[in-house]
Each structure stands twice: as C-alpha cells, then as structure tokens.
Length: 365
Image (cartoon, rainbow, N blue to C red; front, side, top):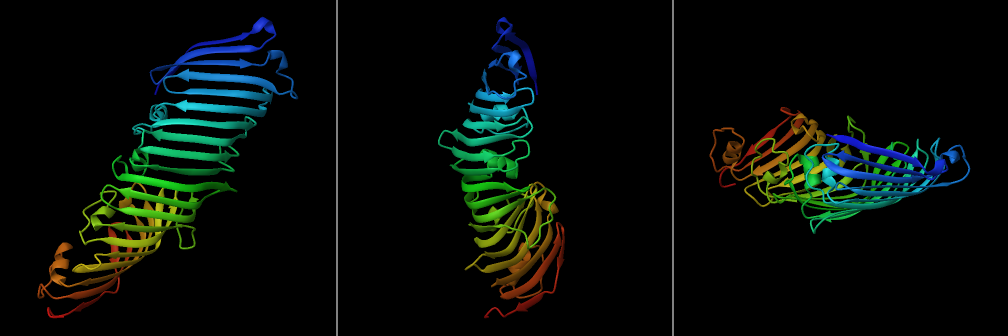
C-alpha cells in the first residue's frame, strides 16, 4: 500500500488568520487534494469560544468535507462538526487496509462529529451503500466512542441480489450467497454487543434459504459457547443436503430435501447451533432427523468444529443402499427396511458413536 504527501502548505494570513491549508498527495496511485480553513493561531489558547473549521478532501477515491466548530483545538475539546462523505468505488479505498475485497459499490454518508479528540462521538449517522439494483443498504444511528464502539446504536436495513462482500467475508468466495435482506439493530452497552429486532434472510446459489429473527448477543473472539448463551432463531430449508456444504469441506451424501430450525449463537470468529432440529429426506426412501447441538464451529476452519452432540434417527426402506452411501457393507437383503437410532459426540474428524440401536425389517415390512 502506498501513501505519499507531495505538498503541504499552511498560511496564516497576515499573521492574524485565518489559517489556510493546501496539500496534495497520492493514495494507492491516485491523486488527492486537501484544503482547509482554521482559526487564527492567536486564538489557539482560547478555550471558551467555538472556532470555525472547514476541511475538504477531493480525489478519485473519495470526496469528503468536514465543517463546524471546535472550542479548544489544542486539547481537542468541544468538537461539533458536520461530516459529508462520497466514495464512488468503496472497495478501492478499503483495499488500503485489506486485500482482495470485491466490488462494494458507491457509499454516500453524513454524520455529526462531536466530543473530544480522545472520545469522539458520531451522531445522526446516515450512510447509504448502493451498486446499481444489486445492492441497497442504509445504516443510521450513533456511536458514543468511535475508537472503541462504545454506545453504538445502529439500525441497518437493506437488500442485495448479489451480496459479494458478505459472501466473501463468510465463505471466502463471492458466489456462495445469491440474495440477502436484513433489518435489525446493533447496540453496545457496557462492553456487550447485541443484535435487536433482527429480521434477515439469506439465499445461496445452491438453493439453501435461511431466515434469522429475534435478539442475540455478539460474543467476543474465542468465546466458548454454552446453552445459556443468547442467540437468534434460525429457520432453514434446502432442496438437498448438498446445499448445506457452504464451505465445501468434503462431499455430503445426497439425502433429499432439508427443513429445520436452530438457535444460532455468534461470536466474532465462530458460530454455534443449539436446540437444532433438522429433518432430511422427508417423504423419501430414507429420512433422517438430527437433534442437538454443534457447539463450536470456527468461521474459517469448519473442520475444527467441536462440542458436537447430536441424536440421530434414521429410517429407510433400503438399509443396504443407505449403508453404501456411507461406504459401509452389510450382509442383508438389499431391499430390507431399517431404523437406526444413535448418538454422535466429539469434534472434527474425531466423532464418537454412542449407543446405537438398529432395527431391521423384512422387505415386506
């Protein structure tokens, strides 16, 4: 990443102000200009009177303007500024901090910057992101401390028919999610982040549909989930079990349509599914019901999932055919029906099979 300041000029007009700023430079290979107007230097020690300030940045990456007053510029107290921002291609600016970000679209925003240098507050936030008809997202609200996120109270509402960024962040590919809609609040109180009044829907390119609703807490990284944690309600459906393999870890047996629900608990680096109740292949030759929990699923290393505790109930009209799907061979009439009840526990590739009851019927039932 490359940043260069080619020119910087401060001019205190007639040594009595106002002070004018003129600067130019290069950010990621694109030119920008910075202009500003500040109070006279002789007013710098005045800590009582609000003083006008205007700063503007123009360039190919973005256009930004800050204007308003500050009471004590030396100590950074008493800020009251309006901020306007226009970013034609937001991913080009974000690539200053992260590599490989897909196209986000344009961002326009406004807010009021208040408080002090040490604890700056953003009020009246109104940010709109759009990319043609594919993305339309609005964020409004306030944040009491920009540096820490303290006192955040944000409302996010929008939809996307091609949510490349969300897909890239969650699954490492821009094509996993085909549609996204969201309406919810993110709030911070005493170091705890919570999602309130959430209504969201995600559709994938393979036909998986997930609906999330309710309230939940966003836990810090490396949090160990438990059944007592606060989560949101998740309903899902898919035309086939293949659609559940979002991370393409390995082939999942094709067992028919999927419906179910769970309580989704989220941290910054993992998720958990508690009170899970999934039905697979209902009305098909083989039906499966899974009940229990996937207690720890890292977002970027699904193979390392742990705290698995699932009751498995399988009914089939062809036990031998079902066994072959899982690379097992059994000596029995291939058309015999069967009923298997078992319990899975463990982590990752180390799955333990608990007490298992297998009932085999004749081919005539």
